[in-house]
Image (cartoon, rainbow, N blue to C red; front, side, top):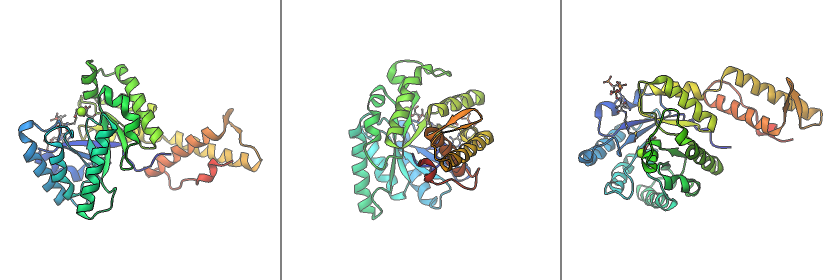
Length: 304
Ligand SMILES: CC(=O)SCCNC(=O)CCNC(=O)[C@H](O)C(C)(C)COP(=O)(O)OP(=O)(O)OC[C@H]1O[C@@H](n2cnc3c(N)ncnc32)[C@H](O)[C@@H]1OP(=O)(O)O
Ligand SMILES: O=C([O-])CC(=O)C(=O)O
Ligand SMILES: [Mg+2]
């Protein structure tokens, strides 16, 4: 089962905007992604990375996880971004255009060298690769398994639709197969699945619908462009009281069944067996991580 470090909301903050950076400590996002890539105009790349380094140095006592989205490694800025920001100790790097496992391996090697030079634990800097092209979608299963630093796979629909030469719609039919593959790759590798941004920051209903949709597909978090979107994501990813209640009933029912010497029992006319118990346990663990329940049953409920 994948890790329960909460990453429901991952808010992008442009790395060239001091007024936006200074508000980071007040945002309730689980993760902040300071952007040096597409939010920063070409002429400001050098100034932005210096600004981000200064910001990180002054924000050592952090309220949330902080990642830096560097420029792609095949651009003239990617490695300079890393050299500048790593000494200021971000929690990790969001790697755009992670189209092949080789690109992620290059980053992994570079991070190891810097950890040795900085005298910090190997593996300290995590990686969140962005799957945002046709090639990336094809390779995402291998990308997810590249490095133990990988904390999840993030889907990027803006670049993905550009690479597919299609338009992005609000209903998102054109994204369904790519999203599915990204989620499969993430689940198979036991890492988190993070959905893409929703750019119409005024359309809160559309945003909520999209978040509900991706939750049903298996995503556990979403990249965001506006602080208003944080609360909606947290609401959607919170298990509902009735789901928690039902999950508890399932666990009680299976414990009764085990006492009776069977692995299957009926609850309200529906069969409860091992996969139902697994799902119930996930609901309770998610609720626990979000402070909605006080205790989690142990692994033994999964054993017959
Ligand atoms: C496809 C991609 O790669 S997406 C990733 C890269 N893009 C980004 O990082 C963009 C981040 N988001 C933004 O810049 C903005 O939210 C926009 C352009 C999308 C919308 O801008 P606006 O309509 O002006 O936003 P809005 O009116 O909600 O802003 C309200 C306040 O929140 C601030 N704010 C808005 N978005 C952010 C953000 N992402 N981070 C920090 N502060 C923000 C604004 O500065 C403003 O502050 P103020 O009241 O002190 O002036
Ligand atoms: O991470 C995201 O969703 C934003 C992005 O780069 C994209 O969609 O191309
Ligand atoms: Mg992109």
